[in-house]
Image (cartoon, rainbow, N blue to C red; front, side):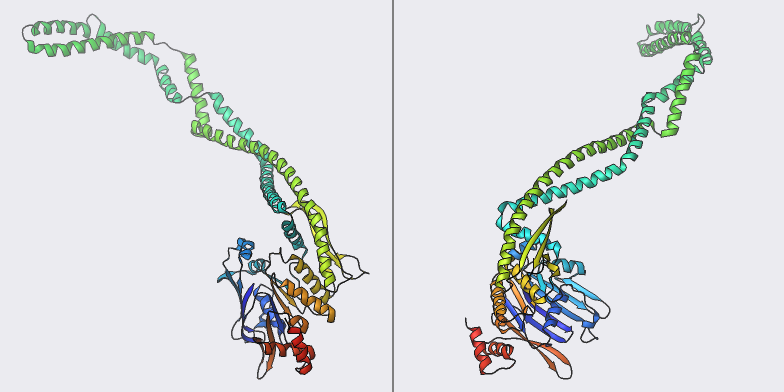
Length: 544
């Protein structure tokens, strides 16, 4: 509910602070007194389009500040906005800029308007938010469905979850489809690269081994000459080994006389044995060395292949690992594509089933709700009015397969037409009142404002409207600008709007606190002046 409003430097208001009550708040005053300025200020704070002309004193900015008090039910409906028990909305308008704030934080007009849709309905001759707008009709119908069918909300949430998943999967599928052609080409190229590397069958350190073997085969003759020459020098009868054998005999003979030489003799024998091993190895090595032109060609061809691949890919083994990983990722995408397609089909079937269940409940509830609204219209002296909730099938969206719109006619000669096209201002206010009365128990908005709801009505209709507003205000906060004493007399809080014409024209508002003030205000509404007859009439209206 709107707890209070602070208005500064706005049109004809210098400064004004009003505290409202839960229930029915009424604003009365002479025509032209400035009642609609209060409404315009509230509308401005909630994001309505205004110009700098609303600034009263151009040397300073205009300010409108609304304070809302939220019940636990309100907070539940407003949980997406993360609000506390009180919310302060303000709008400051200067010659050069406009600033909007929610609880002190700067916001844009779109954020303000989005929050407004959950807080206040304003119904005037020129504007009717929420109920008139077709995009909200399905929300209103669904709120009613949820109040009478315990499974509806659960199915609706299941549908929304499934639809959200379907949208996400469809988005991914479209992205994969766009990349399919490119991915197929890339797969072919990656497979070609991997095949080229794998078919070479190169193993770790193969290049080093081949270079070593090439060095040997390229120098066979030189190796043969050198190794055989060493062998010959060591192993010939006049060679080193023969000489060492004789020396070993002499050293052995000497060691027999002096034990100190035994250690030296042992080292000598070890060296002698090592040379004998070298001699035998070099003999065999030199004998086995043979020219092998075929193997030499094979090595050169193999090294040429390795060099070619290295020039093309850099490190061959790192390149293969990279290509394999890329191929696995892309082929994984194709696997995902198949999985997504399967999931898309499953979700499509699911939302079709759930949307049909939702549609069935909506159609049944639409009939019941239409009857309730027609009943309220009859009470408001619209005896010829007919109301229908039209439901047409459409492509599934976040709300299902139903396109919902409220249709009405208030005349026998007129056919049903969209609610927004109802011509008479007096009729649209009563239509809104009728709808709001029905939705009072299920609606998500806590305050409604009617600007001159009594336009074009009198007598019996006024009494009917007064009864309806009084009943409605038991569920939500209601504001009304009225010239009807019958309606004003039902208010929980009465605000009298006057205009002063001294040096500067100003609008003043007084909350009538005692019974005498209320009597005089209602008497003035009844006859234009306060006299014994109008006071007597006012007393009758104010009787409990």
